[in-house]
Every structure is written in structure tokens, then in C-alpha cells.
Length: 244
Image 1 (tube, rainbow, N blue to C red):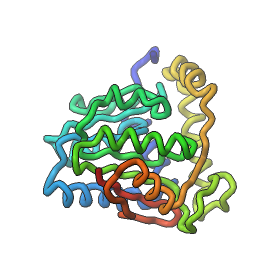
Image 2 (cartoon, one colour):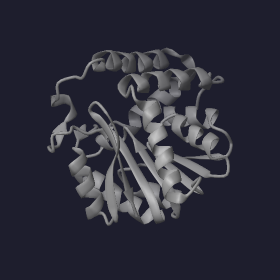
Image 3 (cartoon, rainbow, N blue to C red):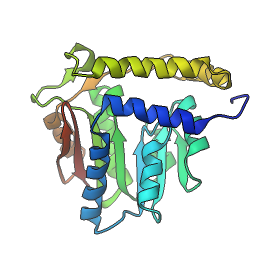
């Protein structure tokens, strides 16, 4: 645990800036998620779950847009979980669980109207993504939506992220990401948390798998979703919605 109080607002705000550097159309993505879900459900969803929610920025925004909605988020990173718990409203549940193990589904329960995963599934190998989609299908209420946004090349072929030519601005975004973690590591209040983080990820190297939209649509259909399709694209990033 941190030894002193965290300036969670600062760290969560700069995290949001870094993520917007990676996905410049993030505001459009969040709008696409909200309008799609509201159109499907005829209004606000009752239960939402954000997978790989980091410091809880998206979960907080969902709670603000839909005050009556029960919002929860899942992450594994002890640093980001601490920032989330310090920053999100009390109405947002913060769950410590591993998306690669299946434990998250037991902790989060079932009956969700919306499950989101933004810039998260690329950490998993293809087999892990397929398993995650099956678990999401079981965790959704009938007619519920899974929305997945990530790097999805539009060439019909899955790729490895590191093997792709960088998009404009991507190098700067990567430097900002490295700098954010470097600044955080130098902050005394995160000393113990950074050690805990290193232990958590010691044997969890990211897969950096970037499946095309077609690959993800096929994987969700194989997982038992009734239908799936693209709802947003910005450059090489895209989001698809799959209906249970």
C-alpha cells in the first residue's frame, strides 16, 4: 500500500491524456459506445462492466452518464487499481481479477447489460481472447452488448502489434506512456505498489495480438453471440459490438 496520500486526480488525468494520444478518437469511441447501448436498450443500461479498466476513467464516465446504472470495473494492476479506488465515485465497484484466468467472471457476476474492453484484449493471445469472449457471453444479460475497442487492422489479417509500421503520432504516444510510468515510479507514494506490480506481471508478457475486425467478429460469433459488427473506427483503431 502507498505510504502517503495519492494525488489520484493528477495521475488519472495524465493517464487519460496519454491514452488519448494512443487513440485520438477516444471521445468519439465513448460516444459510439453510449449511443449504441442506449439504442439497443431504449435508454440507460442497468448494469455495466469495464474490463481492463485501468484507473477507472471510463467507468467513472459511464457512472456520470447513467446515474442509475450499477457500474463495475476489473483490472489486475495494483497501481491502477489503487488509483481507481482513490478516484472513482463510491457507486463504482473496483474488482481485482485476472482477465486471463476466468476469475473475473466469478467476481463480477452475471446479468450485465454492457461489458466494455478498451485497449485491453491485445494483451491476451488469440486463445485467451476467444475464452474471454465466451466468458463475456455468459456474463451478459439476454440482449446485452459486449463492446471491444483495440488496434484492429482493416486488412482482414491478424497481426502482431510490434511488427506493424507505426501510425502518425504513435511514437510520441509511446514516449508519453513510458514517461508516465517513469514519473509514477519516481513518486515515493508508489514505491511498494510498483514492487507489487512487478511481481504481478513477472510472468505475464503481453501478447500484443492485433486481430482484424473480421477476426474479432468471427471470434464473438464462435463464442455464441447472436450478431456482431463495427460501430466505430479511427485510423487503425476500431470497436465492434456483439449482442448476446
